[in-house]
Picture 1: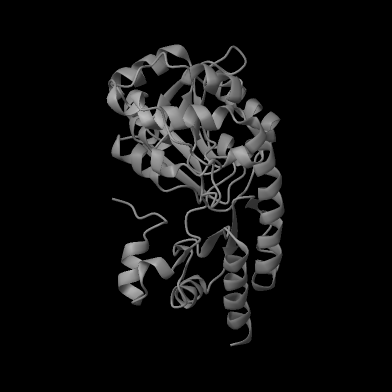
Picture 2: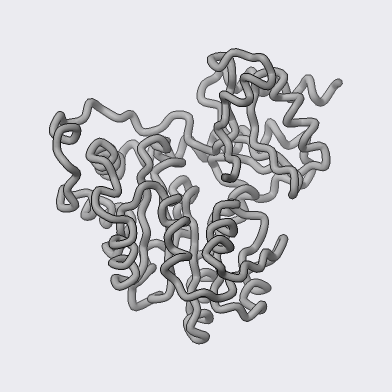
Length: 333
């Protein structure tokens, strides 16, 4: 099983710091997520029902009714490679490690292209291309027109474009979810998640956008009650709360810029790509920086193979000051 951010208990044990004393910046999850109200009692007592309004609320939010609710985008990441014909799939790297892991486990031929542009990925002439937009962990973003053109090119060769938009809600201008599975892009598959922008990672709610036939097969593979009743109720409320969404986007853009400025002295030109929810800091000293911060109870996401660290947003002013003090100590040591 692959390792991910948010593993506070192993960090607490390794560094001898109590769990409650950590500042966890390792996940890229909005630290001030949607405030879930008390949920209706029936959502705990009754089996989940598909006609509870979640699909309609999600369709209005994402601009596409060709969707399937799933237990976080991870459920789709694991299942989709089993439903698609075995073939070569090109993935601009680095990217979220669960993608190549799932496709290789399903016996597809995965070609990782480090630092590749979408043009280069298409030039590899594989039938399928998979990417994250914005990319995880580097924050690199692709334009909507670029992605739709790529889908059209792949369609001509009988291929598929798969786009993971887990971090896209914070700045949705480049999103292609509205087109997935429609006449405009029938070979486009898009994954979305409520874990990052909405801060509801524990609810395990996501959506797949694709053509109806593939969604039906995916629903059959996942089986009934893929989402719990409480998760469905929370997701429906979050997706409908347009006021909170607008205010949160504005705050995240400001916080993302503040984080960029805070990390800039450590990076030079290395912070060019970013999501409002995190900053990517490529550095040959990634392990040393990770350990330095961890010794002070600050957990960031280490990528040893790239190498670099991904730093998420602090949640309040005291956390911002704590991170700033640690960075200043690193700079002058």
